[in-house]
Amino acid sequence: MTTIHPTAIVEPGAQLDDGVSVGAFSIVRAQVRIGAGTTIGPHCVIEGRTTIGRDNRIFQFNSIGAVPQDKKYAGEDTELVIGDRNLIREFCTFNLGVPQAGGITRVGSDNWIMAYTHIAHDCEVGNHTTLANNTTLGGHVQLGDWVTIGGLTGIHQFVKIGAHAMAGFASAVTQDVPPYMMVDGNPLAVRGFNVEGLRRRGFGPERLAAVKQMHRLLYRDGLNFEVARQAITALAAERPEAAADIAVMSEFLAQVTRGIAR
Image (cartoon, rainbow, N blue to C red):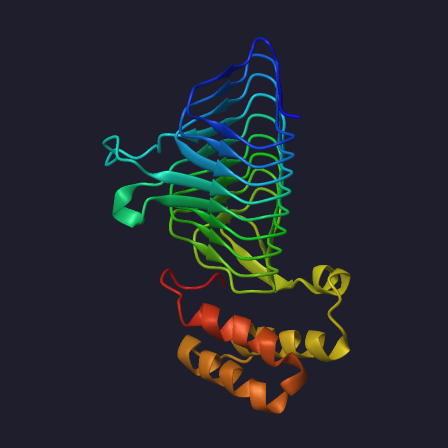
């Protein structure tokens, strides 16, 4: 059964599926849709045209679906879409999109999002990410699946971080981070590839060797970006067991707009 605390406010028009729980003094506005089994803690505000999937756990003191912090926003009907089974800790802020960029902020499924994380307008967060305390995503940031972000890290607007990449504590991420890479610092620097994280996700020796080779082509062989990109694409024929991993890197490098972290 859906459970709404007597002090909570759920406006007419809000859609709550079976098993949703809304805690004390929380507010759910009229355009919100919440999937089955999701728990909203006390003192949360869920507003805007926000859709939240199934079995999420949203802790106390969150602001979900507020208007974007963008001076161009003029009250347009934009969206926030959150997937399933996310854990969202205290004092997080997720904003709606702005129409000039498509108007939708998206958060995937199975993410672990720690306290004080900010996800700005038109961000795209994949699945299985870990965002530690005080992670800040500027507008239009894209995070691939399995990305890990250390605490107190700021990510500049329009930056892309590829799948399985990791940014260390208190990093200033101002350029795109290719998949599988490990970066940290201010100024940001690539420290290697995320070998331990990949092992934990089941990458065997052949796949790890392919990632290591891609890292070498990008960062160790003295190649310019375009030559390295072409060499990585050609690896698929040489390493068919890692063709899917190579495709992830190739597709990412083809879309780089801010230059890659070095």
